[in-house]
Image (cartoon, rainbow, N blue to C red; front, side):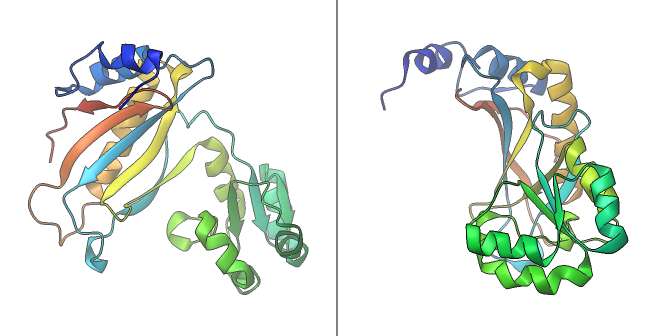
Length: 229
């Protein structure tokens, strides 16, 4: 495989076969994040479970100690007092049926997260086939179907992330920006890894955490030595 000049230089700067301790790994990732923009640092965790089994799912939400470095646009589908509360909490867009119609007729998706109250799920469900593939369908497990919309908005704005297993038994999740520096990214790394470990299904057998890798948007992956479980 032919690499770009910066990427090729990066992979020569460390041993790709070696697993580094978390702080050193983060340092290597930051040193190799050489793009002109503020690259995102991502965590990739391969778990020793079968995602095809209903009793071996890993999914949850977490407000990272230092956020993600990205400000997400939030759409809240609610009425009355809940709509007012969402507006006061800093939601970017608030509405009801008219917002659903806007999505349907204008193919409008100028938001990153949709939050709704349980009583509006029937309305939201009308466009479930549109929202689902885009990962925008509200879900109680992710905290996006709730009566406390103000809190949900505040958490998203504060840097809440959702982690979930994909079909290949890997969790992919952003944990900050290059500009955060090692210390803040390490805090986010530890918080997310703790959450993933605590979410271990009772049905999981054998080694739970198979591998941990850190990358930046444009840089190569660095293996992390993680032997806690």
